[in-house]
Amino acid sequence: MAQNAFLTALQHLQELRDDERFGPWLVQITTRLAYRLLEERKREPTQSLEALATGGGNGEEDVIPRPEFIADWKESPEALLERADTYRLVEQALSELPDKYRIIFLLRDVEGLSTKETAESLGISEANVKVRLLRARLQLREKLTRLFGDETKKREPHRHGGLTPETGDVR
Image 1: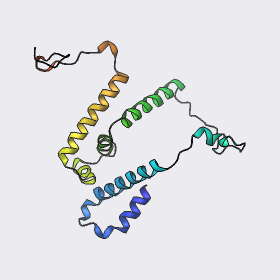
Image 2 (image 1 turned 120 degrees about the vertical axis):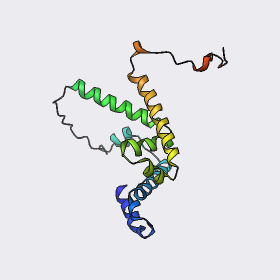
Image 3 (image 1 turned 30 degrees about the horizontal axis):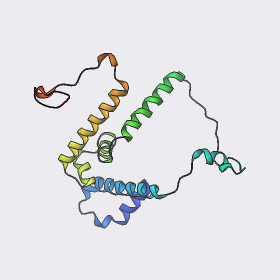
C-alpha cells in the first residue's frame, strides 16, 4: 500500500499546489487507495484457511507451511497470553466502530495527524473531525469499560433533568 501511495504521488506530483501540504495530500492518496483495495477484496472469492492448510481435501500436501514457533520466554506464558488477549479485545472493540469513527481515531490517535491534516485528508471540516473523534473515543471507552470494568464499582446512569428511565418523561 505504501509503495502504491508513493508511486501515485510521484505520478501526480505536478498537481500538488502547496509543497507544505505534501503530508496531508499523501495521507489522502493512501486513504483512497486503502478504501479502493478494501472494496476490491470484498468482491474476491474467499477460501477457508482450514481448506488451504489441508490441501483442499484433495490429497495434496499442505499448501500453507507450518513453521515451528520459537517463543521468547522472558515473560511468563500467562503474562504473554494476557497481553495477547488484551490486544485482541482492543482490536475487536476498534473494529466494531463505524468506519467514519474508526478512520478518524486511527489517523488522529494512532498515526498522530493533527486535526487539520485529518480534515484535509478526508475532505471534511475540522469541527467534524473533532466530533467524530470524541464519539469514537466515547464508544471505545464504553466497549472497553464493559470488558475490563470492575463490577463492584458499577454505577447507575445519571438521571438527567429528573427524567424517568422507563418513559423518558419528566417526573
